[in-house]
Image (tube, rainbow, N blue to C red; front, side, top):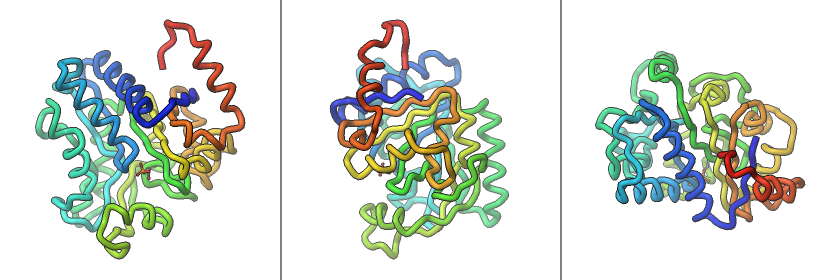
Length: 260
Ligand code: PGA
């Protein structure tokens, strides 16, 4: 795992967008794994800016959602498909129909989860997966206790996640209790994991995920099992890290040929 401590939110977005653009340029048919929440929005803004400047095209790409709420109307402004369209897809040249997510509106949710796993396999797997982290250590919507080898399935949100996400809704009661999320095993199948975290509220979860034991108690700790995981933090999210000075030294001494 490589840990990059950036000065601020803007620098996190620039680093993350560079990784994504490099991946897109290096693949004939790139598959981007997109997360929602507040953290990646600045990265999507940066990708849109790079696209407008003629420096990034998504014309050959597919994009797949990490997770989706169950119980919201398809056109609800907080459904994750809508959020990703608003923040990214509507402003770039990703072909219509190339944004995919689990079908949370189907009667048979179990079949939807299996179909989503099959779709990810048909696309050839995710090349780079953008990830956030919950204050409870969740990854995607894999809440504490999730099997480290879990696949796409229905999950129940913790009370703390529903409280964290209530800011996107007019009341806590409106926050769904259920989601379909890629499992931790599904996430581990991606070629490159790119976890972003900013702000002081993430410092505890980030420290447990990066420097704590690999354990279902902190699902994001599963990143420690992946051969190509990059964690990009701002200073505030890095305050709980015992080895912060070492991570800084690694970046300082990095050979110029060695990319993230
Ligand atoms: P946030 O959510 O980016 O809104 O903090 C991250 C997450 O819950 O995974």
